[in-house]
Image 1 (cartoon, helix red, strand yellow):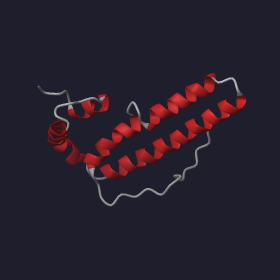
Image 2 (spheres, helix red, strand yellow; image 1 turned 30 degrees about the vertical axis):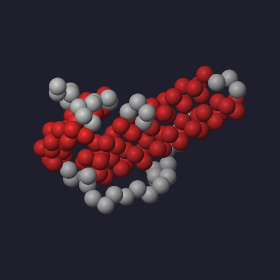
Image 3 (cartoon, helix red, strand yellow; image 1 turned 180 degrees about the horizontal axis):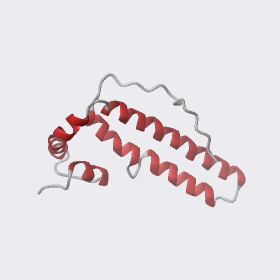
Length: 120
């Protein structure tokens, strides 16, 4: 059972909107090694654990990962504040920049969804 405290565990602020940084943070939010995946892994491990102490520990860690998910998500929202139009117009440019930095490597499903398939 979870109880949601409406206050974030840590105060989160951003200086100004930055959609590019928000896009990069999406991987930490919902990517394969992100907070959502980590919470799911700890939660399923906790469900299958028979030792009460270890089960409790794993469930505590899963809950902590969910709080991290909320913090990262809040940062992403703040970074995108007022930038929906800029995002729509600049996504192709951002994708080209990302592909040039990574040498056309596109190793993430999130990145592929954001920027489209790798052009060769």
